Image (cartoon, rainbow, N blue to C red; front, side, top):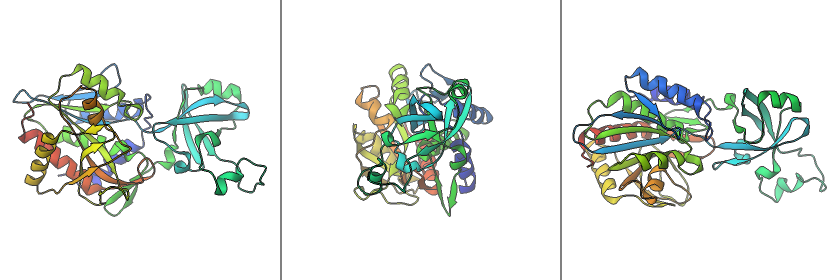
Length: 347
């Protein structure tokens, strides 16, 4: 039994570990320790994926993936007086973060700076004037103030290519009754699901691969590497699912199963199976078709790496921002996947 309190704490621990795309070692360290604590061996591949295999009984091969990278930005230019220019890494927007502290993951340590947009008390002569009423805020309009000298930035290993993420002290999750609110629930909450599955599942029917996939936010790079080399009968991606007026996704404890996203259709037969499993667990499911979205599953199936893929997720407000999700929906995803792995044949 997974309580909301224990699930919140598991997600909190994961959220507080920085893991921008391609620089995911902080969360890797925690994941390795958590898998080891429940007696499940995990290994990494050359793409940076962390993979746990739990041997099955019927010869089938199922992968459940949750990506471990988060969105952020990447330094493009080191200017004078400790000022840096950045561009997005994944689907990040400066107005979502707002002015405030960000962390730069330098080669020699973390350097904090302030994401800045300029003063508000300006005339028409200032470029910032248009941002008050007429123009959207872009990364090109923003910069990071560190107040460090060029030599100090060099010593810290801050350079073009350095990753930027939201400041660690701004990441701490907040509890809203049965909801969790936090940056990077995409996809740290799904990693918590993987870890709980590793704790619970001991005798799956198929060989079960629990994959913390790398570099998903920049093209599902890790999942494509894994699925190109590991034959599978099916892949289920764990994800957030956006609550937006154009989708029929409702907030609350009911998980979401996707029929289609921007990369194509999910497998109908696999979705039928998951719906049947959920019904046996007395867990309702929402079905949705969404745009502006992709997952390890849809991208791997589109590329011909897996024959069948599905995407199971939890309804989320403010996606790619300060996200809010119901802990019950996350818990219900765990129950559905545990039942599917232990009851169903995927070969």
